[in-house]
Length: 180
Image 1 (cartoon, rainbow, N blue to C red):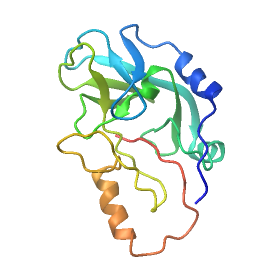
Image 2: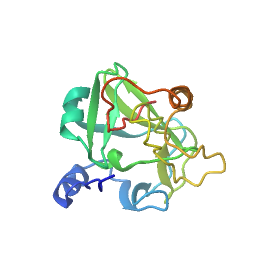
Image 3: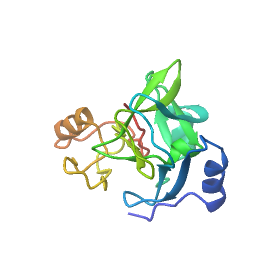
Image 4: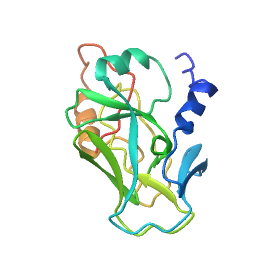
């Protein structure tokens, strides 16, 4: 399998340059490369950030990110569109034991605290990935006691197990989209 290209540094910097809430910062993470940390406590139920960026159809996203290793795509409830993440929320890492969850309201994605979060804690939510090629395990590196070993949702894990013995017809999408 050929090496998968990484986003160019200029593209990565652009994603970071979009400002987010002043109490959030992007820095090195033990979960995965870079993560988002809060500089102040966040109360349970509060909106932490909004996942912003260009809205694309799934087809546009597939064409744009064909064979890319890393994407910042967030699938919307209609399953026809994604947000190509920019700004601080695009750097929030996955965890199987998250401190936040996502909610979609009017086509906008908000990251909300599901418990009190202390200052200097990394912000996380469960990606619940729902697509990707069957040979892509989407391994999880969160380190939580309840880690399921993959960033795929429970529903997607069951679907993939059913399909693993059968050949899948049609083209397989190389990109994974986060889903609640």
